[in-house]
Length: 138
Image (cartoon, rainbow, N blue to C red; front, side):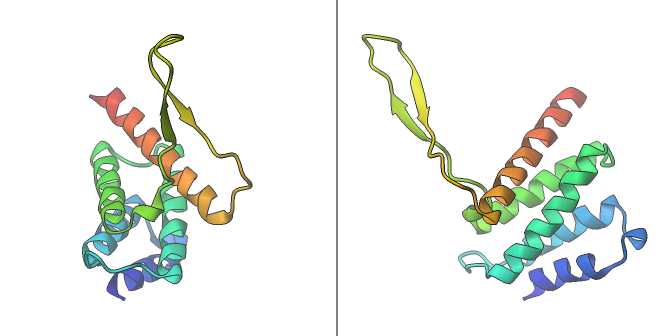
């Protein structure tokens, strides 16, 4: 309830009264408010993905500092720790024949995506962008 309220306040605040720090702070605080082992409801997940969308756009516009990028990815990880369904499932890894080529292949299931799957993939993309930015800084 508290975690959802934090996100709700951010989403109801006019954009001109918010900055990047507010978005990162709301994500971090909402993650800390979540109790381990408690399943999140659809309303919370919808708000969470709305804030992730805002975060993604801020990152694309280079609005976050290095510290904010670190805090943002920490908040994402903390949310993932509480509910693994915020990110897509890893593709199935299939061993290849040792006679042909050594290595592994990934089996992808190609189906029509729903809104939740698109949000999951966008969040995965956000994490990749953060990782690239932080790698470039270091």
